[in-house]
Amino acid sequence: MTSLRGEGLVRTYGGVVAIDGVTFDFPDGRFVCLLGPSGCGKTTLLRLIAGLEVPTAGRILFDGVDLSSVPAHDRGIGMVFQSLALFPHLTVAENVAYPLRIRRIARTTCKMRVDELLDLVKLHDVRDRRIHQLSGGQRQRVAIARALAIEPTLFLLDEPLSALDALLREHMQVELRLLQQRLGITTVVVTHDQREAMTMADLVVVMNRGCILQAAPPIEIYHNPANSFVASFIGAANLLECRRAKGETVEIFGRRVTIPEGRASGISVGKDGMLAVRPEDVSLKPTVGENDFEGVVEFIRDLGASVEISVAVHGQTILSVSTPKDRPPVETGQRVGISFNTSRVALMPQ
Image: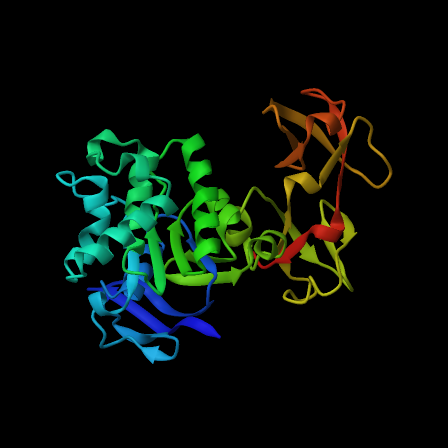
């Protein structure tokens, strides 16, 4: 059953369109990431769901119920803001208890719920500390526990990990995903970090300029992007100019390449397009074979767990990525042969 649905949502501010005719279906109990660059409309969409903004047009339904006339505090939604918005004068336990206290929940019930939540987010040992005495990760978990205190049917988070350092951020991504799986709450997270979305989400919703460009599982978006923006925003991608030829072929760098059946259907024969090739699907050899493209190595970057090699081909730079074990025996300035794993390329309009 679809838990959360948006129909024709529009949100304008004067003459500025922040959300432009958005429709979506977020399945029940899934982890959804709204992904896109700054200003694309993802936070505005989250605030519309939360009831903190009113749509100019369209409506939002939760389990079939129109939320248009339901105020934010009656929607049963837990929300974690980017700033966390914790109360510095209260202890950890008092912060978590706050939404229960304002709802006049009985003291014994409130204490039991707070204890349960602090155990859930592994903060029981710091329950009496003030917020300034906590690490960034601990503060994040306090905000999550407080949002869960009311047992929400929907959990919303606006870039919750943006203030954390890289190592802690990755740790919290896993913790948040495990917590969501344990509780089974439909969760919507705003992020501009594609790695974060790929790590956590069941469904990635890529947005730009107030529109949803593609909504699909992370792996599907990675391997079958809807357009060049999605291809470049989700992971690294080589976007190569090409022309649709006859059958299942495209012409690139003056040569025809066969692509998977059905991948060329969106572009007419003779029309220009873009071929998206992931760096891990680019192979390099120290010699140029009969079926290889020819290029010159421009730059090599050894990242420890992977090796990135940039190659100049017909005025374009193509990135190849391999593991150290599979690193091709090439050096900067060397003439090399290049081939693509054509079974995994994606063709799209320019």
